[in-house]
Image 1 (cartoon, helix red, strand yellow):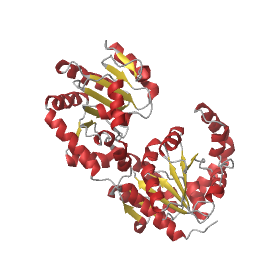
Image 2 (cartoon, helix red, strand yellow):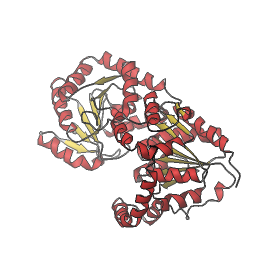
Image 3 (cartoon, one colour):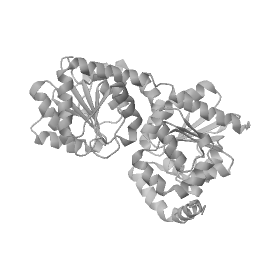
Image 4 (cartoon, one colour):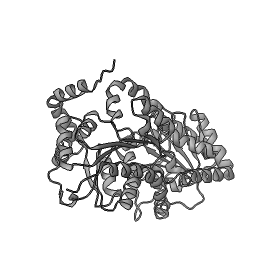
Length: 440
């Protein structure tokens, strides 16, 4: 029985629109969104100037948040190089994603918040921008949005696509909903062969699927800024003789394991500086309490600045957004969080590109490509628990030549895989050319 669940989804979301709208608006206000942002959520972009779009091919890229925007940066750069006259719209689901887009993308790119996946939101949004192609990054599959685009004759694609082991079970349950949508997509440019197999399992046509690597590699390579590294050297009052243990993107319960490891490290390397960067900065004060309960002195990142107060405490807790990538530049060893607990891990390549030895836990489902890349190159080490984290960290510190070689292997592995952003951009340009876009 070839029954599609999409009509049911469309009916339910249409009926729910009025009921959930006040709730969604309340959440938007709590998140700090203003009236202009709220109107964009409803698909209303009339305040944006559209005259600069006239006569130009229009590409709408959609990313969920900061991580997906990071992949989009290199793709946009490749598009603008190959097709200088293109008009690019970059939408995000989160405010943090939009802030990153504003920071990383040039002023010629139109940055907006994405419409909710209600027909009454996506239809006016598509009518306003009239894109030649709608491109979703990674796993952004929105049934109403994509279906309305396809019905309007707009080409649709997924680039830098990935479907993790952790998420495939949920996607398979919704396969009847996704099958019709994915089968009508013009291209699905995935990160890994495994991602390609999974999107095919969900209903995408195999002849429209290709594998082109991870576009985030390109941004990572370009993000290594010696000036930022030097800024943290001064901010953290480093002499160059200290051991610096950076625990990045940690989740709840991981900080205790990190602090246990730190206790072991200090027995042999008493001058070690520990820097904890929680995945959610609002947890910084809870971590501060945890550190002080252990009798350790600590400082928050926001208490430090380049011209005034410098670091003097043995523990620093990062309570800012967007600095972790640069912070890895001063690390001796790195633990990447979200991996000792089943959260899917975080991007271990952010440290690898600096040439740092990276340690991570067994739960790396969302970054299996990065994990496999580093392990194949001898640039990453997996630990199963806090005890192994302490043992591995101490081994690397007692054997600096091993740590140095491991870090070099990690960086070389990342450098050898650059160019994915350009390959994903080529897919977009091919589909755009096939669309025979008309000058408006």
